[in-house]
Image (cartoon, rainbow, N blue to C red; front, side, top):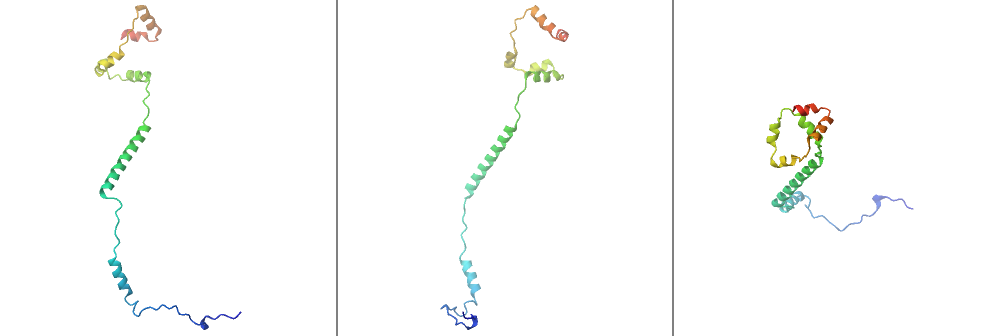
Length: 137
């Protein structure tokens, strides 16, 4: 194979020629074309659509927060014994104060229809350890 020398090979012409003075004012012409062609700004959402979407998002977030707070709330499971102990420990509230807080419906619910004779009452009181407290009150 013959040695290849780049300087000795005949140059092939492409057939394209640059006009004279083309690159002299090229930057000015390019700048003018850029100023003439301004890209149009596309609006994806109108102002009204944005406000509706914002209100909907705020509503969804508020519902989400309310749901999370409701699901974390402890269940109200108080037994009768807990309520009785609480009421017994509050000495600052008198019986008259409790009576003032109750309405007619509450009083009807509390009304017990006990048909006890004296002997049954005596047996109940003597079965209690502190029956003297009941007699004194």
